[in-house]
Length: 206
Image 1 (cartoon, rainbow, N blue to C red):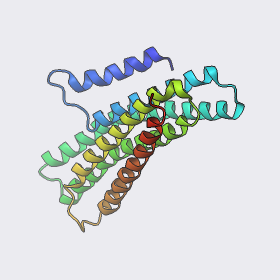
Image 2 (cartoon, rainbow, N blue to C red):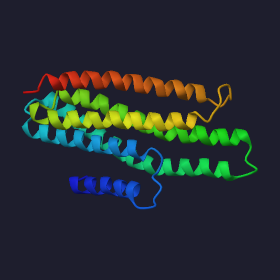
Image 3 (spheres, rainbow, N blue to C red):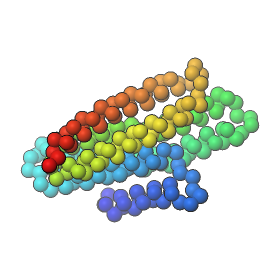
């Protein structure tokens, strides 16, 4: 996929979020940050491949690039899934005959979409750390910026997910406790990765 198409997709997300009177899909900010992060990482790997003379490093860079492109596709698809999840919650709240358990299940389903966004952005942070060891000095700025955007995507996804989970009482028996622990683990691991990447980037500052 070319850079022009990537820019058009990102611009489309921005238009969807900021159009007058438009309701932004749930967690769209996190998905957009992740999409930009994946684009930067893929671009950095592409630039590094032009100068790479080591076969193993070249293979690693191609794998990182392919995975970043795949994650970008996933994140763009999750924008739509987020809109569907938000609508399901809204319908369950409006319907007078909706039983409480069905409403709670809608909230749990809605929390899963931004959590998947956070997981995808967490995967991008792992890719960024790997890329730092392969992409070379010319790609440091793109990888560093991409990792910052990926961490923002993790935060955006986790905050949105926890906002939905907050509507599910403890002991409801529908799996919210497991989801909350999963969200905490993703954020904790993402914070550790961000620290590692920042430290590595600082080593290359002039």
